[in-house]
Image (cartoon, rainbow, N blue to C red):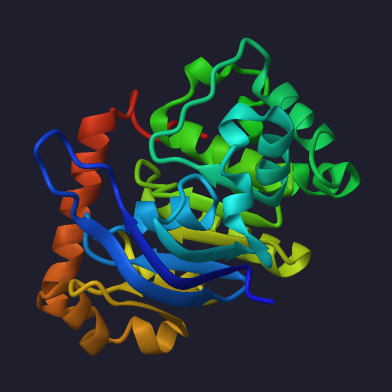
Length: 276
């Protein structure tokens, strides 16, 4: 079974007063394969909206989104129904861009609480130390969340999202403030986690090389609105990327680095990625 399927989906965000809404998607049909999938495409093309639809956080004006075979619209009342919200979150969890987590509990205790409340506490407990080590957070377990740098916070939230144990996880720019070597170690750990547990993880990233190295599948967003899902070797070819981004291949990395710098500047880095 494909974790997520879009069938003839149309979606627009509400327009402001006196404005016509611009469709983000129209007639979109695509299936997301299992494993570790990366969403790649130009900035502002709809990757975040796509994941919100896929994770039953927003809902299409027409068409159907299926999440693990279920019509995502059954969760439309989740914000008003705590039991329905819990059912949705246990099915699909979401790491939002610039997500924060505040508590006075030690970081290690937070990880333990998440593991204890997961879909499979025994499995989560067995994976805890491996994920914490992969995120370079072992030395921070006695600290507090508010003491973490932006990059450390991102790494901690990725660990929590995997420990929680939802069979589908969406991550919106989960490592934009993480320095490259740590980002690679963390993405390698996520890929291994998917293989070991059958979890499907979908992450939007600015770094095409991360997708090239660690993706089991790629969802490519083209500048003309086309969305394609498939093998990394096909969708991350020079020709496909140049078409999608409408830019020479050699300039893509300059754009990605600029975008990462803008994100860090916008959201702050609280002293860098930390010593870990």
